[in-house]
Image (cartoon, rainbow, N blue to C red; front, side, top):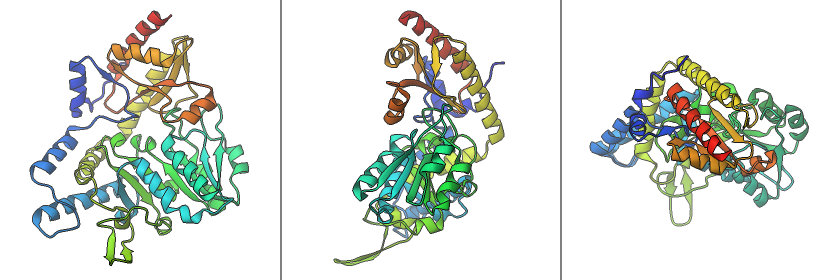
Length: 401
């Protein structure tokens, strides 16, 4: 049965791509934007924008109200419980770096910082560098053949010296949901703080961060169909209270003189300088759009399309899928073909996929791969996109045979 996305017309770029004979299958890198977001950004700039929290005039009041309304919407979307637990950053990468510097004072020489072998560079390098700065040990949890953290190994490797555990919710390479319900209690038993990289996971379904049980959760607006340049850091109150300030400037200051300063608490104390005002307001409009969708129907559509993608790849004998993808993205290689060559031929036929190490070079080395091609799906994709992809794939494989 051919799957049709009822939300496709909400995204103007899809019509523009079709006019150019382009098929977009790279939503895990960045998602296309709904018309409501585009309209919100246009209105934001057309009717006047002003800096937030800093003036009493009408443009500033209007911007501030919309900005803080977006904070409440994000808190509602991820089940944060309070908008004060939401810090706006300039991306998930900045949120993770904020944590790495903000928690540095808790790390002593010989302590363990635990990550998994499948992490994106954004959730590996900040902890790697923190370990180097503090003479701590970076512990790498292995993964099993299914692309999930090996829980038996984790029980042996998470212990009394563990201070932080940082792991992705959904792998951006393997498409595997990680066993957080089993993994996080191992760290909590030893009093360690837990950080979840939700950049991929937050896009697929609704996730309640309080039910997940993590101390911190980060995500990216641009993957969640929102504007780029905006990230989200959620933290439990007790965890946020342990953060030290890491950027300094306007807005985050309660009082200052030439020799000392007093800073605001969360969230404003961690939002130094002018924030991405229009981006945050646009994210609020995107969240309104997402909240109006039937998320059960969206998830069912994504799962059905994922199954169609998997079936098509498995039917081609030369294709080798990496691990066992579960949701919305698949990484693969073709036997005897370099991923860059195959990607080049797909690109020439108007197929937009990702090729390379996907910002997870250590994982690729661990898997013994130079790289892979990744197909990733958004709620706007449907069977017509996959049909064009498979046609282009067959033609490319025939040329490279």
